[in-house]
Length: 417
Image 1 (spheres, helix red, strand yellow):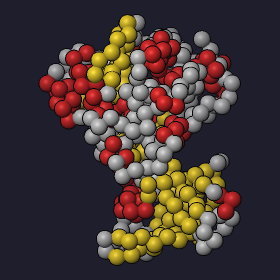
Image 2 (cartoon, rainbow, N blue to C red):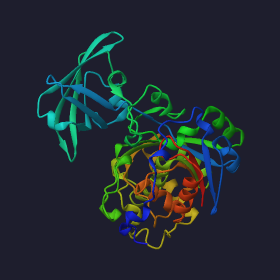
Image 3 (cartoon, rainbow, N blue to C red):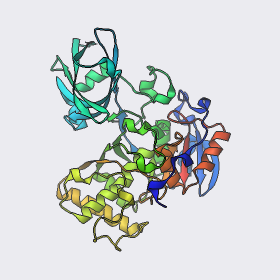
Image 4 (cartoon, rainbow, N blue to C red):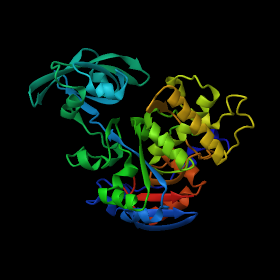
């Protein structure tokens, strides 16, 4: 299959607005769970998920935390300007960014841009230690995004505290409602830790401490990775063929221990959500780069959109790695990545991925997937289709005819191809 020439219209389905869950259920783990096991479709409740997983398996979660990325400023004319934080620019590191004081710069989307030709926007916040004034200034453009410099007049206040006071949690646009106070809790996973996402890894929203305890009781080995979900996750595919769609870049962090756990589990893992899938599968291609070039720099490990579909980039791999790869080959590749980290005395791998997973892709690491139900003609639906070998429509037809709730606050599925 030539993945680039996939027609996105083949991944359309009718999704009535009333099937989109506008709010979560009162109890996270009481959502419905669709079970797709080797072609058979059935259903249960999410709190019974552990019963369907093999004892001793490795389960990988995305521990990113959604930030209050939507900020509003009002001009002296009365015009309301929305600034949507996309990714840190200066400093570029997420952890440093949230600790920075008095000045920082972000890559942002700007709403009502035509009303903000020039000048600085100002807003006063009532903080715990008194009023704080924050300003926003446009410093340039990158494509459809804008570089915005923020300054504030209190050196004791971090940018994390600024956006907690000034920002709004960015719930998905298809909910067609304003953010409510309850979303600050319900639109975060119970295990979220690392700030940086502008959208939740929604497959994880169903988990409760009770379900996590049940996983532990079943001997499921739990590991966490971090992929900061970008606004591009909601970007529709507008081109007829997916070759015309540019995937967004997302930033990942993976601990050395996670690679060790993957190797201990024969490089097989149950992924919670498509973001965990993108992280885990990207590790394989990062490992290939270190196998090819043991001295490669960390910033060169970035996985580009079409990399998985290209011929092996070096004669070293021609004939050496099969497609799909044998499991021993995956272990060899991940061991190379672990060795590369050890040579640099790195405990955490920081990199980025632009990978697109679509029919024609051979999964390397993920062998089971917990995920919600995704929008028609989306890259997430392409990822699911690739995972179930094209059988996505039967799964979605079942969900639509059996009253499942769709999208971010909707129901869940466990896919075992």
